[in-house]
Amino acid sequence: ARGSARAWSGSAMVDLTSSADGFLVLTAVITVFFQLSFFAVAAGCKFDKVTDFAGATNFLAIAVLTLLLRGTFYARQVIISTCAAVWAVRLAGFLLYRILVIGEDKRFDETRNDFCKFLTFWIYQMFWVWTVSLPVTFVNGLGSNPPLGPADYAGVAMFAVGLLVEACADQQKFNFRQDPANKDHWCDVGVWKWSRHGNYFGEILLWWGVFTIASSTFRGSEAFGYFTVLSPLFTTAILLGLSGIPILEASANKRYGSRSDYRLYLKSTSVLIPFPPGCYRPLPEWLKATLLMDWKCYAVGLADMAEEQQPFDGP
Image (cartoon, rainbow, N blue to C red; front, top):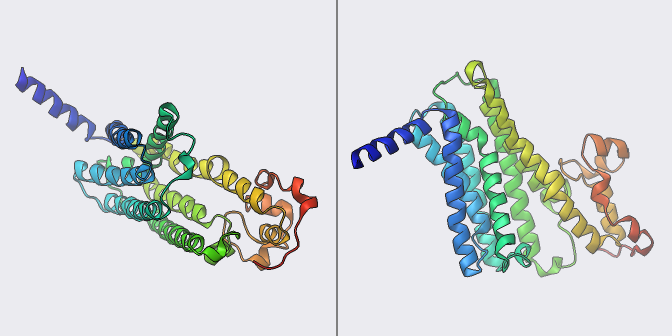
């Protein structure tokens, strides 16, 4: 009986690691186990320093495990896994360092002591990790190996630029916030002089790059791989419309909206895509809204403060 059980479990593992669709199931199981393990620590100890770290390292685990379990090590598999791993290591290291410095994540002030609300966040994180990892999971599960082509090189370039922009923006904002002299000012240095959310631009670009690398394999029987576009689409959607820009813009508008220098910053600085301020300011509003995604929904609360504007007396 024991021998049969071992044989069954062994064959089940082979089935899960012998195809792209099997890897989708395997990575879902890995992600649920990974996140619930960290959740147990965070909830049991009322400790939120591992929350973002758990998300980033889960990406690393998926990239490494799927590459090793498949064992074919095709060039594209190594490239796409390396991209995901480099991004995950950089993000995990930065987020862990940041939370250790600032001490507490205020996002969880209202949920840390509420088991169900806290668990809801971790369930969302499971879905985020698994969905955004789809291109990596798909490529590492393939048995075929189309030659590298223009899409692969373009994808790597997109990833590299996105990673560089995201890393620079994150570090610049962190350094800015650590300076007491900037306590009552928004970050407008470096990347932030050209984009109000340059780190999000970088993250969106790099995941579109990862998807572009994977797209080279979407042919013949592997054409169903186009569903992995959910990865960059989901990243774009949550950052542009859900938990990213809308929340941060509303918070900044509430804090600085009555200041004329802040309103000038809004008019001169692209909301997402880095753009020279001198060129961005004179653009017509319809162009900013359509091509540069500076939507009216991001101006929430500003109209109510129009009559309360404070004169600009320098940062």
